[in-house]
Length: 124
Image 1 (cartoon, rainbow, N blue to C red):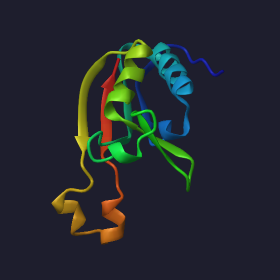
Image 2: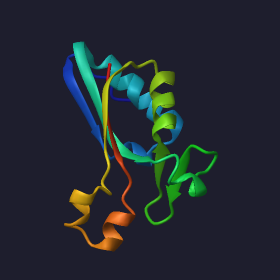
Image 3: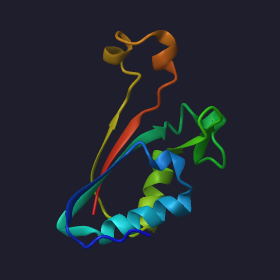
Image 4: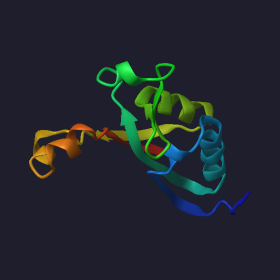
């Protein structure tokens, strides 16, 4: 229940939302938005599931649970729905495909074939 003054130009959230429920994630986004100074941004960086490639293992068509670490990887569409439900505006976005040919040359086959794309969202 930490509620800072609205004075932050940037709030960076990286690889933590995978351990939050959908409701907790929306609450976090709302709290972070309240902490922003005018013109401030929230950057959310987390794994996402490719809705086509990962469709076989998706639960409710929206997310996948990793039994090893209890993390949740959401589809990009579901993540954007949660952002919208929290009342935030998507300002910019990019997705890094960690299975790209360039990265696959520096990782073992077992490492890179199981990696999910990483979404980077700038929100306000």
